[in-house]
Image 1 (tube, rainbow, N blue to C red):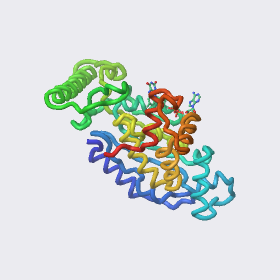
Image 2 (image 1 turned 180 degrees about the vertical axis):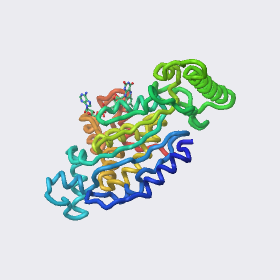
Image 3 (image 1 turned 135 degrees about the vertical axis):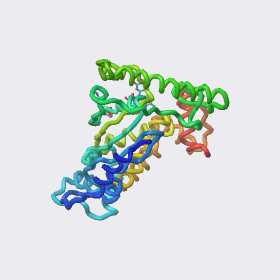
Image 4 (image 1 turned 90 degrees about the vertical axis):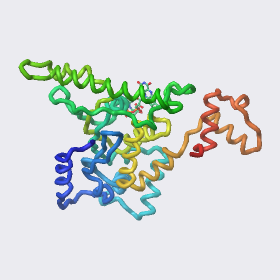
Length: 306
Ligand SMILES: Cc1cc2nc3c(=O)[nH]c(=O)nc-3n(C[C@H](O)[C@H](O)[C@H](O)COP(=O)(O)OP(=O)(O)OC[C@H]3O[C@@H](n4cnc5c(N)ncnc54)[C@H](O)[C@@H]3O)c2cc1C
């Protein structure tokens, strides 16, 4: 259960309030403000605040006195130009502040993106909830045999049941001991900052995460990628939907040049030119390693059919 009735009431109260402002407002994002969008079994993403819109990007690029907009097509063209040429600072003029509830092992990947401001729920002061990420059966995959950082076939039958039992039982047992250790019924109880150390990495934590649009795109480029771990990818995909409504021109340019686009090395470009000239290029004649060639072919072939 990502949100309790009491928390939902607080969110509804926030959403019912509005005030006039001279600041730039993105209508698409106004619709999302404060709403908690569920992710995984107990997690969510919700927008707490944002600054700027598509026009803020062109306004900064033109260092304008006014709104900075010329015409819609002109603005869209400028944003695409900035994205194409890695002129990134205008995108830093937009900011977003998210409230995210996520398993600790996902937070460990997420926190590697250092160009953000974070404030995490304190398990020194507060008691963590009994909420653990337990993968749905369709995500209970075996270790990949070709990629050390990936997943292979799904676990099935008795093996899947055994793994799920372990995950549930270990989480429950660790939390029972956590509760017992901090219990203050007739005993002082272990400090919360110490008792938390026996909790597994699938327990949920929460944080406020503030980042500018340029660095958010960098995060989304890596974490919304098909190769990213499923458990962080679903958060990134949810954020992509929000960003698409917030800054539609910038998001479309990002989708086109970064998410869907590809960077080719000098050797890879040479191969493309030779192929266009009709030459049969192979891995051996490409000058690329087997791994590079595999990735290059995958880029040319496009996504596999579902
Ligand atoms: C598929 C994948 C596998 C990974 N595997 C591992 C792993 O096995 N082990 C592991 O530890 N990490 C791993 N990571 C994390 C990865 O190494 C990066 O830490 C993470 O992706 C954040 O990227 P970043 O540093 O570019 O982002 P940010 O920290 O947000 O930084 C954004 C940009 O700001 C600049 N910047 C930020 N801080 C500095 C700095 N101190 N000095 C110079 N420039 C800076 C850089 O240009 C950087 O690209 C993995 C990431 C991915 C996507």
